[in-house]
Image (cartoon, rainbow over all chains, first blue to last red; front, side, top):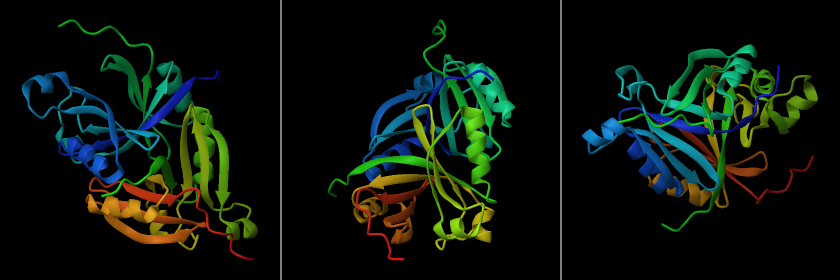
Length: 147
Length: 147
């Protein structure tokens, strides 16, 4: 199979119970984490004082980690997701389709088809060791949806 | 509290059932991982063809991950550990004691006292969000034990 360009990954901590903000504050206090970026859900941002965190990116020493609230594809915290949480890896690829196909050929389970999410392509696979890899496109953002 | 120098962390995948080698091969096939280092248990290495993997360090794109077999402090695969597995973070610190104390002060649970393991100091804390951080000393290795 042809080589697939993978640029790297970041661990993503998915925090149940709308506690991602609490987790961010904890990592600042415990490990001196520096918040270098944050993406909140646009709808929740407008409606609520406490927006749902899609990703807060933290730097601990020289390493990066993403902290997220649990949410389903519609951006709503789901009851199913709220009980879960855990750690996944967000893997950046130039060609998401090719990366998902290569992982599947090696034995990973495809959890969801490649879809456009948050303005870029995203596919999800679970590997034979239980690790979820969210494979995301980089450098090929689709245009912002019109308001 | 004084600043504690943390150098960064690496995700560590702990694989039950002596399947770390299989995981390494899978990540090579699925994500083009490159193995850049491996530490096996010295006793197991001498006695068996299939040594227990303390850490295999893989590079996926520009990112690093550690893959380990489940083992207890004595280096033996334990029945309890074999059923578990999962993802932890190995956090590198200049002063392990200070880093553990700061994390505990912020609300982390100290899982084990700071001990010498594999020739360097290691402490373990679990944060309020269920993540295990193995805090390891860097650059201050204790001398090799005499044979």
